Amino acid sequence: MTISDTILTDRTVALRQDFPILQRMLPNGRPLIYLDNAATSQKPQSVLDAMDDYYRRYNANVHRGVHTLSEEATAAFEAARTKVAKFVNAPSARQIVFTRGATESINLVAHTWGRANLGPGDEVLITEMEHHANIVPWQILQAQLGFTLRYVPITDHGTLDLRTLPDLLTPRTRLFSFVHASNVVGTVNPVQELVAAARAVGAAVLIDGAQSAPHMPVDVQALDADFFVFSSHKMCGPTGIGVLYGKRELLEAMPPFMGGGDMIREVTMTGSKWNTVPYKFEAGTPSIAEAIGLGAAVDYLQQVGMAWIQAHERAITQYAYTRMAEVEGLHILGPAPDARGGLVAFTLEGVHPHDLSAILDRSGVAVRAGHHCAQPLHDRLGIHASARASFYLYNTLEEVDVLVQALHKAQEIFTL
Ligand code: C6P
Image: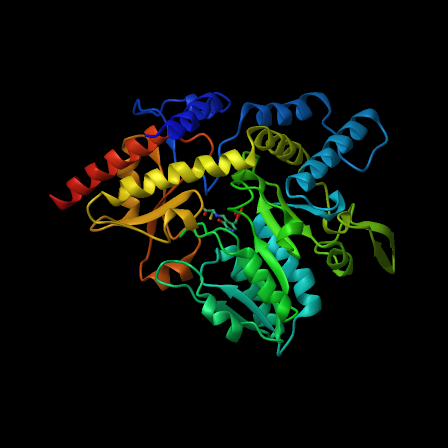
C-alpha cells in the first residue's frame, strides 16, 4: 500500500460513518462488505434525513396547492432539480426531466423523440456493450416503425471497435445511443470521439450515464450530448427517481410521453395543450420525497468531490485488478484499469458465478452474479454469466483483501 492509498483509505474510513448500513453485521456475524454498487449504492444519513424530514414536516403534493405545505414541498422539489442541473452542468434546470430512472429516461426518448423522428430507411446505432435498457426500447420501436438497429462491435478486450465507425455511422443514422461506462466490462468510452463521429453524419446522441454520473465529474455541455440519462439509486440517492437531460430545442419539439395531470396547460373535451418543459414529460404526481432525496445525494457527492470519488475508485480498482489476477483460473473481463471505471467483472474456472457469489456471501462479501442485464455482451464474450465486484466512495483496500482471500478459498474448494 502506498502513502496515497493510505490517505485515500483514511478519508474513506471517515466517510463510512455517514452510511448507517455499513455499520451492520450480517446474520453470520461478519461485517458487511458491500461490493455491489453498480446494482445500487448505499445511502448516507443526510439522504435518509432529507426524505424523513419531508414526510414528517411538509408532506404535500407539488405544483398544485397554494397552502404552506404545498409551497414548501414544491420549493424543495424544484430546488432538487436545480441541484441536479448544476451537478451535470446543464444550462438550465428546465432541461432536467425527472423520470423513474435511466431505464424510463431511455424509454421516454424512444417513445417521443423516436416516434417523431424514425421510420423505414432510418438507422439507430447502439453498441454490443449496452445494458438491456439501451437495447430493448429500440427493438420494441424497431418492430413498430421499421427502422434498422445496428451495433458497434467490441474487441476481445471489451472496448468499442472504433475502426467500424465509418461504416456504421452514415447519413441514414438518426441516433447514436451508447453507454458512457459499461456495467460489465467497465470500459469508459471515448465520448468526445463518438459524439464528433455522430455529429459528422448529423445523428443525434444519447448517452447512458447510469454508471458514469455516480462515479466521475460529468459536464453535459462539454460532452455535447443531446440526451444524457442516469439513475438516483446508483449515486447515494433513493430508488424511484432518475434523470433525463436533453437539449432544450429537442425537448421542446418532442411530443409528451404520458398524459395526465401536471403535463398539461389546458384540457377541453376536444383536446389538450401541453405544459412547458420539463413538466410536459412529468405526468401525474411525481416521486416527491425521492426527488428531495436525490437533491440531498447530489449535495453529499459534491461535498465529497466527484474528482476525489473518481480517484479513489481508480486506486481501489487498480488494486483489485492486480490482486484478483493472482487468483488461479480467474479471468477479468474488459480492459486494463486505466481504461475502466470502478468495477471488475470476472469468471473463475470451474465455478458458476452464482455459486461463487454464494461462497463470497459467507465471508460477508456482496457481489453480483449473472448477466447483469447485458446478455448480448456476454454472448459476444462467449460466456453465460460473470461475477462482478463494483466499488464506491466508501470501499476500502482492506475490503478488497477480504474479497481476494474469499476468491482463493472458493478456488480451492472447487478444484479439490
Ligand atoms: N444496471 C447493474 O447491476 P435503472 O435500472 O433504470 O436504474 O438503470 C438501468 C441501467 C442502464 N444502463 C446501465 C449501464 C446500467 O448499468 C443500468 C443498471 C444495474 O448493472 C442493474 S441491472
